[in-house]
Length: 285
Image: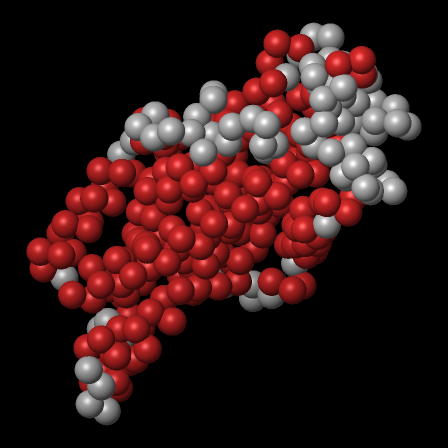
């Protein structure tokens, strides 16, 4: 049975459409929700104690929080932070992991042993607890969250790329490039690495989902993005004391996290099936 192409996967296209719409909302956040916006004229950090803990209404679509801040505005602006964290972490981890994994898989020897042990050590700990331990070493901020998650995420991409490079280095691509007189570095970065990036790119989609979920959890625990800057995690943290009488504070940002992570997961699964050549071995004949 042939795999369904990525563009013909209904679930993947639905997930991609949702993520595209979410990115558009994040980019247009100042136009959609700000004091000068005709749609929702409330800035995300505008405090109005007389309007605190109002339920969803035509004036405040998602209600207000404990300080009277408009929750729709904060959720829309929080999408910018959460998506920025997810994409930054995924791209940086992919870049670092691809380079180190490629060098380790092709060079072998002591460098491969060192990188492999680092990968095994990092993967032996649960992802979030490792991120929690690293985050506790730094002052909470957007930059520290990104650096923390990159530090604990690159190993997954490195493992994927290393395995692909080891598989490809004895194949036709390597043999043909050597016969043409190409140098080892040219063979690795011009020929082998591009051929090995398919599974790693698919893995990066899962990395976006993991980073968004981890940022939300770290911000919820006070180790991520700090108030008054809005992120989905920091909004959820403020909802902890009001969950019984103001359900909307946790509901809407929680829903945003859930659907975003779900969409990234669906897109990652479809990309893995379309780009990972090893998945053909598991298909029924």
